[in-house]
Image 1: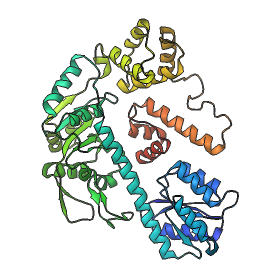
Image 2: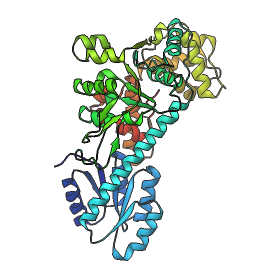
Image 3: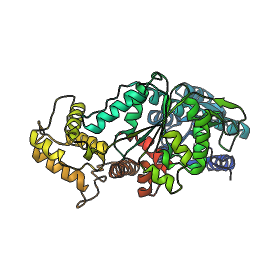
Image 4: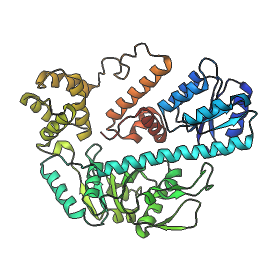
Length: 460
């Protein structure tokens, strides 16, 4: 079995076609799912991160054209290859107009199947990459604000004002939920690189065997699954800023490769010989005690000194005297469009809470009480009730992610259950994806796929 290179789904009511295609495609290294009708196929799509669907035009219960519409309405990036008989070419052409990638006539030619699979998987991944890049570019252009007037926050503002206009590397240290990414974006916005890419990499979420490809890219054929050339994050950030979030979670092997790229601003794609030179401003962040990581041999001392040119220490919220009130006012105004506020007694109660999850926890609480409370202004009684629920997590009752699943079908209820559970566990773990994955018994990469599938916001 070759290394996995993409996730494929075959929807066909003929057992022989499903079995033959599955065997051939698995031999080429693809992970292949199969379903005999559209309803089962859609259930598979909702449970897995599928790249390409091979879809028969004639299906029981619900025809291929209708299933194509369902697939595209749920995820327009998924590529669909239509399988048609000789008499169904007109329908296949219609399917192309409705968004299908291409069509294959029966009897199937294996060479054509493999060619289309490779091209369609590459196109789907390019779409996903481009969408992610556009989202990051858009986010880098939106003005971000650092809320607070405490001594620690004012010191950070001063450091940003002094350090942002330079190209010096900056290392941001602080607990989860303190706003390290926001500070990185402020640095980018205050630099001459504003208008150029701001590319973020969560180092904790990338498996060690993929980190080199993710950061530096790869050439077609560099490894099984490399169906085309892919630019890495360093190359995508050329001219702009590369934010290495959770940098202390990288393996020592990955750290060595990053060190060389940072020192020389030169690298080679995986499987390539051409040296690529870039101009990238590096900002890194970690929630770990990085000096202790260095002392205990888990983080390279030379990389630490390279990154730690300008350090920024972000204090936890409980050390930011007076800032809780300002943040509460900011978030309730944001979520209610300026129509609601807290009473003085409610503010006093919330200001006395420790907020162990920092700004992220506070923001989530305000969003929840804005939706769930009918008070206006929001008073002490509501705050005490919701703060207790928020803190205790409804431990005495059934898990809150169960909720009311109503009259949902089994597949829909399963999806909703999984989504709610992931959200709750993310909240409990300060939106640290790696830690949450461990709690849920998943690999971080698998959890990221589910977060993307359900559209869960992890930037809170």
